[in-house]
Length: 190
Image (cartoon, rainbow, N blue to C red):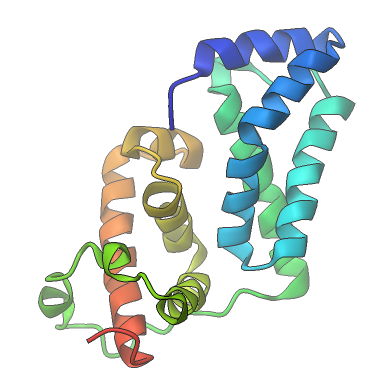
């Protein structure tokens, strides 16, 4: 994701003053990534559309709620999307718990294939992957979505998730192991 922080902050200042062009520019820039994030986190098109729309509605309703001292505009927008997605998923109970039973001792064997996503090209395998991602616990699902699917850097993901980059790296490693185990159990990969 390119670093647009300075341009984003200027657009946000203009938005807070009522500039419709600034709103349109932010919408064009982040509507797609916010939708994809909400979709990957929920697995639901309608929920992702609603979350994306609500993020931008909050910008219109509360244009002065962003504090540049707390982070970037993109981090602020993704934070809103993250909170909205969590609340909606809690209400609809879409979140399946992921069982880690039987994973102890198998981590060395599972670590051999870290770039699992590069091998999944057929539609049926992508469907298996989506189901496996949705089954991950939220903290692991978030890092997979941010770093592997949205190609966000560890420092950017760390800022967004408000944790150290090392935590991002360890969660991502663990999430990939969980994904591989889940996909192997489903017979999607060997």
